[in-house]
Length: 237
Image 1 (cartoon, helix red, strand yellow):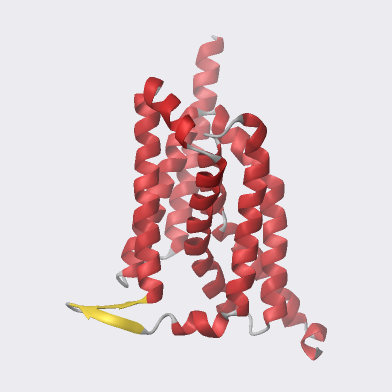
Image 2: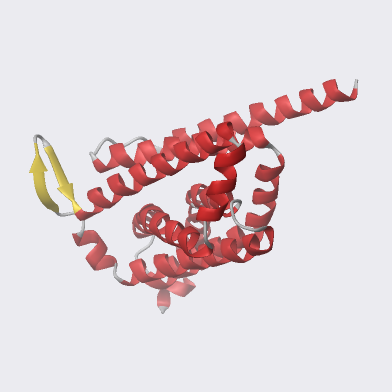
């Protein structure tokens, strides 16, 4: 336990916790949007359950880190592309996220009857199942980041737990904010489409730095907030 006395340990803990929160943004947005289809009295509970499932998933994967690393070994080759278990999970998860985000945008555009039918179909069990599927996919980025920044399992798990506590605290505020502003809902879904596309091409070994993706999201949100202020000012005049 000598590593607990080293300042580098706490620097890596703070850095890793911050990165885990950043990497969890897409997870929060996805959970916020799909739980909006549930009755209002169930939404908060399912969001918390979704994030707790994500926490459990990350801890399990961290405990099996040697197995996770082996999942990067190629299984088969198509043309010049080598595919591992990790690649297949990323591609499948990316396609699922693309399909789900596009269908959500379609329902928001169509509205009316389709939206009522959709609410009937979206049971608590189906929502939790969708959250679990995406939790598995999003957990891979989280785990690989943790391994790259720390060699101690205790530090990795502590950072993941701290990040998840912050995410659980803020998920309701983010959900209310997105729900209150329909244009932000579409922007969030567009961001999820971008994440889904990024996961697919990552599965084909074309890597795009996530910093670009998050900067694009931040810039888009800032522009939309300015537009909201302008619309509000115009309405009052």
